[in-house]
Amino acid sequence: MGNCFGSKSQGQEQKNDVQSPPKPSGISSGGLSLFGGSSQSDKNKGRSPLPDKPKPRRRRSSITESFSVRNEYVIKLLHDCLQRHRARGVMKSLNSILMKFSKVEEGLSSARKAFKELEKPGTNTVCASELETACEKIGLDLSGDAISALKIDPNDTMNFKEFVVALSLVYMVKPETESPLEDPGKPARKPTEFEQAIDIVVDSFNFFDSNADGILEKPEVLNTFNTASARNKDGRGNISAKRFEEMDWDQDEKITFPEFLHAYETWIGIEDDDEEDNFKFS
Image (cartoon, rainbow, N blue to C red; front, top):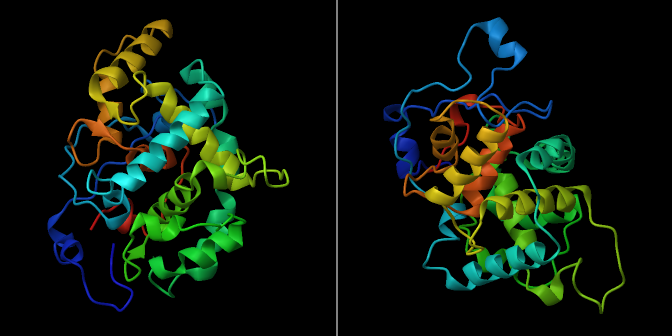
């Protein structure tokens, strides 16, 4: 993340000293496997779909920091949202997740359009102070204090992936009485494509969250991947660990929803226009 007024954050000053993370592949909206199987394009290009290049430890942006233990109010709202989704049912298999990749990609197209309209010329970033305008552009209901609850620095700038995470959190952290899907006191309205996409990602998160505590821990994620890998007769014992590393960006062996959503965006093939800034935390 940068600064809306052009000054460099500490993370930007260190940018040249930090290697860009390897881009995971082997997954796309075309229905490729989560278990590391090569796509046809990977085979044609003669490269491994899962490079072993180690990733440097990353600093948290204010977006991921908003879900740290220091923001207990937001943590509670997130947990409530995850539990509401869980009550409606949990996905049955990884194949169910794969089948919905294209719908998520389509649902995020409105966010891409809003990002393009709001981005600072030549920067491939949007100022965090534009979040309210962005929510209006994609049809998110802004009743309540969802944006202020996140405590995102309005002077920060966001690349596209961070932008999607921020919009998703605005949608998710609204209290139950303000949810367009849950409040019986409001006229029923059809969820926007963006909201439907995030609902799918939340359901996918809950699929991995076997103990329903709102945090994905390494043992439960590895067990899910290994079970699915065995069913698919993949035979790659270390693939689940690699998939976990793709999600665990701060390397604490726990995955928050923002981290999961970042990885999900990569899985379905969403990239930032400026690849050098792709998926960086500052």
